[in-house]
Length: 489
Image 1 (cartoon, rainbow, N blue to C red):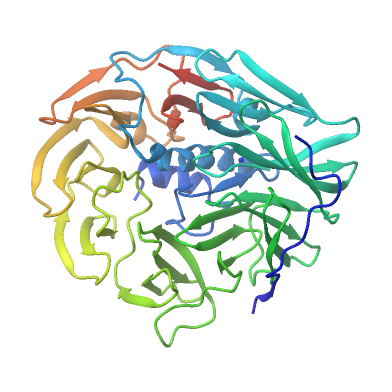
Image 2 (tube, rainbow, N blue to C red):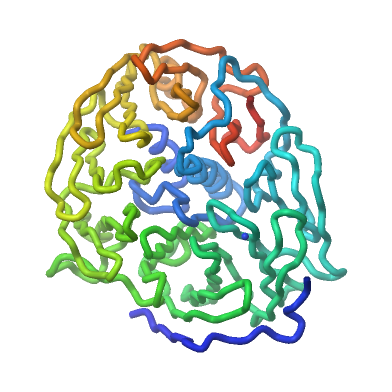
């Protein structure tokens, strides 16, 4: 059970709070993040508000670092043709030590907002030049415990502030100049995590020595307390010291140190499943729907059995699922009535209100690498051990518009760039070797009008074995060994 305390009246700010936000590329990343998430089809997208908080050093930290890069990219800024420019040739605009990315709070309006290595200040860098735009320091003796921002960030972000070993305050800060917009006292917690929701509220999550946790939803703007929920310790100890949270379709999913699925509006546990399911089910896939509903897919930690439902915004069940929702995919919302389901070897497009099958497509090769939804189309990448395929379908009808092959490449990543797709992959020779540790080393551009492929040179300043990501419509290279972050253009 999850005990919930609702505070309808909220709490007022104190007097100080009035000063003037099968091995596919995704599977490789999920596999790397296995220490954080127990299931192969974990939630991929930041969607409305997923932030991973780094855990212990070593393999788990690397896994969370690489996974966060992919999670941020999965929403691809809700399209608007994604990348600002169509790449003809990629090169490094600047390179930074990877701790810049690990300290990143948000990327918005051409700014990278991050806190300092000693956590005593926060600053913003120009994303194109890396020139510092502003910096704000905390009073002496205070430090940032953690920060989080809704995605996409609008005007502000939230930070938990500590003094010594104690957490003391929740502050809301402006993206434009770092000014502290509001500050509210917090009770001291030994272990505290902060996550942003999609409506400017934040989730404050603490864990105790017994493994149990407390989740609180609060407004950082006026200090109002929405609700508090007590979450029991997981039955199986977590393999990671990190905590992951996603907020999709009005559902909060916690992974890692805590394992729970809560209703965003009330904090109550989400238990909606077909009748007869046991108490040991854990959510592993959550796909938000444009109308506020959500597709939920759960796997039994005991038997491995799987069940799924589509939940309406009211909490009622629209229909049951027999195939998992296709992992969160960059989507401009142009065809909101179609929900994609996938086993990894095929795509089923169903009516999001009724579950009626609209069309079905088998993929070429051994499984799906990635996809992008935009302008009524679905671009889908798949690969086998020796070659990859990219195809475009009409989202409404499933009609194949074009299909193309890229030989000798596996594990594709897709990035929409104007009238082209930028595609990154791993050479089959490297990917099939016993020494392959993940990452990419091949690039191409696909013309969206006819599917023709033109290969590009791999950027000289980006080591092979890196991954690509999109932040604020800009392209970055992320080195999976944490050696650096490269702004590409």
